[in-house]
Image 1 (cartoon, rainbow, N blue to C red):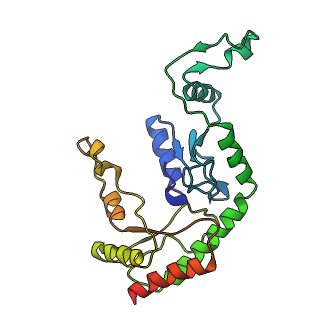
Image 2 (cartoon, rainbow, N blue to C red):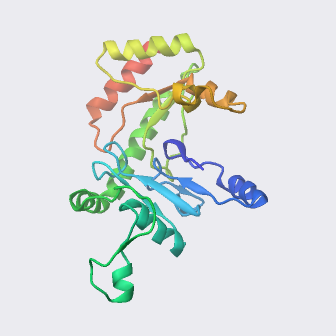
Image 3 (cartoon, one colour):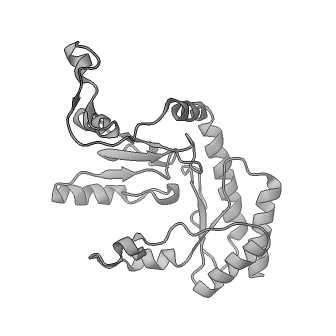
Length: 247
C-alpha cells in the first residue's frame, strides 16, 4: 500500500482485499511522514509500515529508514535480520554473558548508526515547521497553475498532506518534453518520479498484469522543486517559468 508523494492511497480497499485473501498489509509510507487521512497519520494503517529518512525526505537521517509494527514477533524478527541474524536479546533474556549470543538465521547489516539516528531525532523537533512550509509552497504552486488547462495538479487542499514531491501531469508527451527542456534552459531542475518499475531490464521479462494506469501516469509526470525552506524568489522563479511556457 503505497502513499505516493505523501498522498493517501485507497487504504481501506486494500485492507478489504487483504482480508478476503488472508494477507497482511505492508504500508509503504516512505513518502508520507506527517500526512494524514481522516485525522489519522499515514503509517498507522498497516501490519508493517516502512518509512524512509533519505536526504530529500520530509525528515532525514542522511540515509536509512524505519519499520513500524504492533506485532512483537515481527519486531524480534526484524531486529535479527537487521544485525546479521544475531539474536541480540538472548543474553538479556537469560541473564548470561553478552558474548553468549546466537545467529538464528541469515541476516544483513541494516541497523542505523548512532550519528544518523541523532540527526533524525533532532529533526523531529522541526517536523511541524517542515510540513507547514511544504504545505504553503504546494498550495502556492496549485493556486498559480489552476488556470492552465494543459496541466493537472495533485491537489488544492494540502491541510492534511506533507508532500515529499510536488508533481504536475502534462497529458501530452511532446509538451512534457518541451516543458522539461524549457525549465532546464532556465536553470531549473525537474524530474520524473517515477518510471514504471516493470519497464526496467531486471523486471521486463517477468510476468505482469495490465499496468496501463502506471504507464499513463509515468508518461505524464513532471516534478518541480520542493524542499522545506524555499525562498519566495525561488518559488516565483519556478512558477513564472511554468506559466510562461504555457502562455
